[in-house]
Length: 295
Image (cartoon, rainbow, N blue to C red; front, side, top):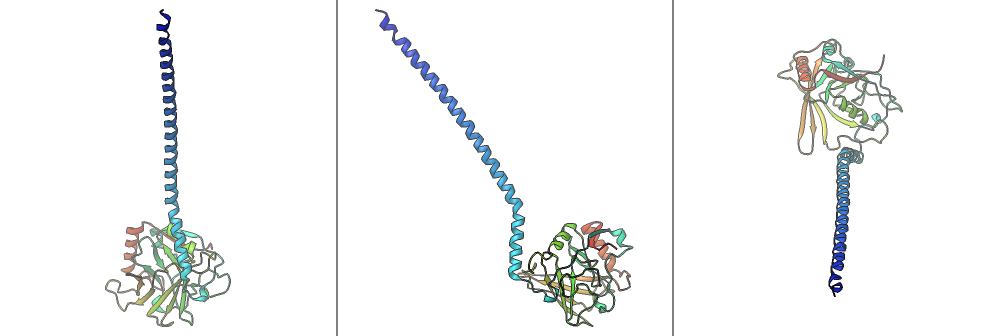
């Protein structure tokens, strides 16, 4: 009589145990899924972060690529006689301002250059870019496959004169990083003067070829005109030859002055020299970078 009354108890207990076991298994499955989801979220976060970092790192290269394509499409307006490669590029050197006070690394421009182009010039208001330049020559740069030399030391019969920015002792910079950029492009400026004997105006065209690896391209394709005008007088630099450089851009014009800081005899011209040295110290510190071959 008691057995049937007791039978449901073990059956109910068994069902409860099965329910609890099933519940435990479900909890374990839920926990396992949550862990898997957590791992997937972590992996996805890492992948997004890596992709973001790669994107940021690749942006400069993308910009450079687009820039070069635009330059190649624009072509180069530079004179055909200067569209050639060079046999070599002089090693980079550096000099302190203390050394500069006693030793001029640039070739000092002399005759047969016209007096307006002799000596050494300060490229004013260039920030950490260009510092000193010279029309002097000849230097030790040699062209590889014909064409006219840059920095020959005299204006040609065509009234043109070429300066290689990464050339031997004709251009100096305040930044070693920027010197690398100039060297990679191997920029040349071709000046076309209004007169070979008494110039007062010049247009300036550039030519780049990435040291012979690319066809000629215009690194300043966005500019409408580069030119310079001889100033008849200057309020501050009365003892110096001063050229006013103008870059005509699509939406604005940029100007600076090319100021003679040393004459054809290697004598510093005041107050231009002191103004250059003060600007140099304030903007770029104590170093100047230029290129020169070994003796």
